[in-house]
Image (cartoon, rainbow, N blue to C red):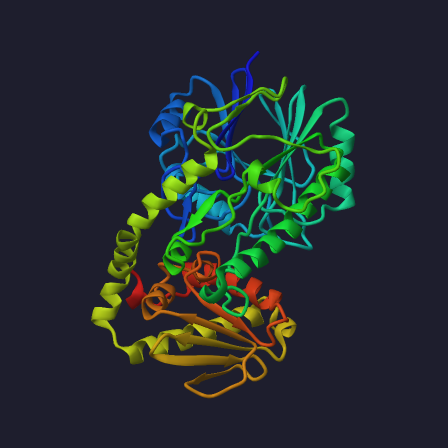
Length: 460
């Protein structure tokens, strides 16, 4: 009986157990995530080939989507899948991401309730949401009679005792694999000049590596508590085009290959870090890993460097695409109009906070949106006052271009494009205080605004 893990890219794997298949977190269309990320490297399997395989319905294949971020939920790919395809998605309180899936025409969706088991062919699936960390991200577990795979994706947090006990009790006698994120998936420190800048790239890179080391060690410690045998590094195989432009290719995000992870100061204990990378095939029964021909004589890291060189040549096209999207607004509206729309954005943020009963958590917070070479607008959450071009001591300053501003207020982008997609520049005051609640609320509100609050005249 055939049993394989096919590593497509980033967090996307195809899991095969004889004639049963699961496609995990597809990001295959080549579309940008957060309006700035490229899959790095792109999937070795052509999108159309995989679509043809799925849509032929000759095999029992399901799609697992862990959460609604672009790099896990590829709309351009999903809308081409046969609408009868079985999709598994965690049962989140908020149904926004579920609606995103169904709006792509996929109607056969099973919501995975926490720690409830669902059988699909020879697979048994379950999910777990760490509610103290996030209400819209989840770990997925996949069990066969040979192994137990923990598809942790972006959950680089200490796992709860409840989840640990569930895995241990359900994985007895099986090989246990933990696949976990091994990189940075937001704008810190890359978009914070107080911590990361052009003046000392090497020092800045070391700072980022320290953060990555801390995060990966948490994942390793999770593996130990879960009594996992093997660790798969993934969920950070991305290349940020805005960062590539900013640093002119001198710096890009940490590439989380096993080779690079071994250069970090990590305590692996008895956990076996598998040499399993995008393009590889792993047999989970005998641990045989087959590497593709392009990494037989050339290091995987060198392949990725060559791909990065190609992306550098595409930066002008990347910029033009952004300018073209914003051009219609810059042509037909004035800077004064933009002031009004940014003010409206912040005023709606206050309305959202009040409705969600989260405003009290941000008492005393003052935010400033600085539009490069144009104006500044601040929001004082003590009195809900929005001010233009006033000199105010703020807790958080977010600097964006006029182009990015129009894309934000028109809903073409959302706040995550600025923070996770690296299109914004962030300062915090004092610099030692991480405004975690504020950033989380701004990211959630970004989706609310994009779906419900964009002014009609800005909708394309």
